[in-house]
Length: 294
Image (cartoon, rainbow, N blue to C red; front, side, top):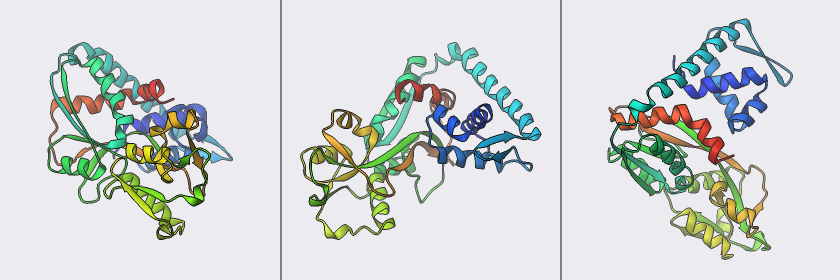
């Protein structure tokens, strides 16, 4: 069996609200994401944990017993955090993380909260593109990587951090039909998702001139300058949407929802600092999301 604290928390909220939609809202997740994790959790058991009656979820007697155990585990986890917080604050060493460039809008908040509790930790955080971040992890130059798409060529463990919503945008008060597409460089997760979207919906890439740029920030500035249209992570352009310098282009299949993931090699022994960081994320993830990403 392969349970995760994340699945425990999802199951707990679904039971408490008798609703996937309300649980998703509380956990700052999409309904499909909650449903997927709930299904994976159910697959670990021989008997059904719940029944669907219309839009409501009814917990089975077996599910109630599992719910009690889940609540007890989560409570013990919180006790573990607080009982050992004073001792854990003495941990020292270096935490090494490579992150896809757009991860700059995500991982610093988790690291900042971690440093508040573990002030003796030294941080090495490298922002690059997905391809290079994965290569750094594979070559054991870092112990952790932050990406939105998992690697294809080797196995990793993952801890889902946050949803990554991709939307199509252009400069405010411009005609999208007259503008070319702006793409990230090859190896970028945003580039891969954008190309996958165009192929899925039969949109011809070659009918408009394409422009390639080396970072999401460069793409954003090019869109602001009126050079073209692109698909970008919503969190990277939140201010521009609020001050109305960019506008959303609504199309079928958008937004695209992926997830930011903290990943690490399955076949590598992690340092105590890295193990402590992963445990910290598992325990404090929902609190951090509510604090910074509501």
